[in-house]
Image (cartoon, rainbow, N blue to C red; front, side, top):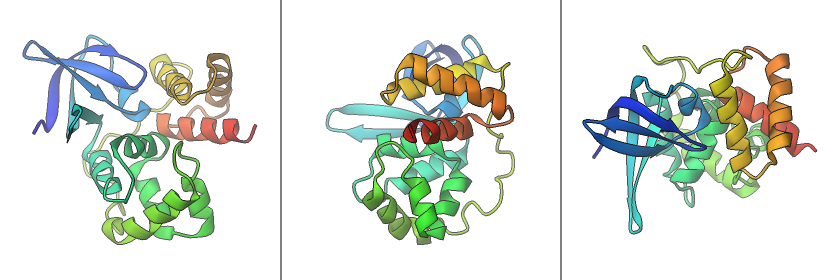
Length: 206
């Protein structure tokens, strides 16, 4: 089991990064909140979760243990796999998602449905199956947990990761970039996950 990686960031892609550790390059899948904190050429430590399936082994990366814990909890929901769990964490911070799940009301269910790939039935299933598993788990911020990187006009890498995430979800480059550029001006203090959620909400209403 690979619990974490510590090494140089060789590359950062649409939905992944490659980190070299002791001469070996490890490719891990990650969402915009994690990728936005990485810088090519710098040494970093990323927490990981290794998923083993018949068709291979996949590493998923996380900036902190709160996100990784939620990643594991989400996969206990019937029909919710690792890729959809990662999508959930690309749209919501772990504590925010936990709050929506434990609320379980109509408004919360509707907000959960903004996650790509999550429909009404899956959102309701998440609220039903996870409520007792995460109730109180994210009541307070974890000691030592780094806050999400703010996305401003100066954090071009973070903004680019959000644009690439939108393109990966099927939106045209020009449309995605226009929405993100506008949101950065309107909401300069937003984290990468908040920016992605706002972009999805805006694009979904068109």
